[in-house]
Image (cartoon, rainbow, N blue to C red; front, side, top):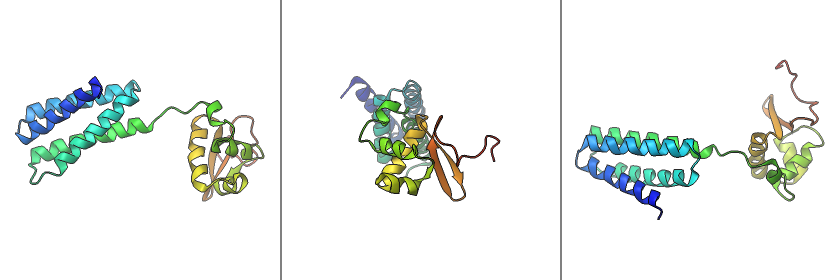
Length: 179
């Protein structure tokens, strides 16, 4: 257990104890500190610390939610814990894109998708057929390729068309006027 892990565990244990004993100012101070630590970790991209905060916030939330007969004050703190958990989850889901060279490495699903798109724009189902990958593998590769700036996508009726970004074949792409 790291020092940060121990500090956040102590913080959440203190929060639970304060709520159990109706010490609302202390509970609010613990929640403020937890929120500040979560925000600092998120803004500075400290993924290990965000994982610790996510785990211990969920532990604290679950322990509190399982208690019988929570007062309105305790329910309010439960809502605040949920808000912190949602903020941490949102920050953790925004990982920077992997480098294009890593994505396009031989044998990766992303490399197969890029190879298929070199022949021209394709829908998701057309990519599945062209690559031999599963729908799930194509669905996981496309957002990463878009985030890395290698692929662009646009709606075409009920389908989404995907093409190489930049110098790729844009014959099925909408015009620059947005039409």
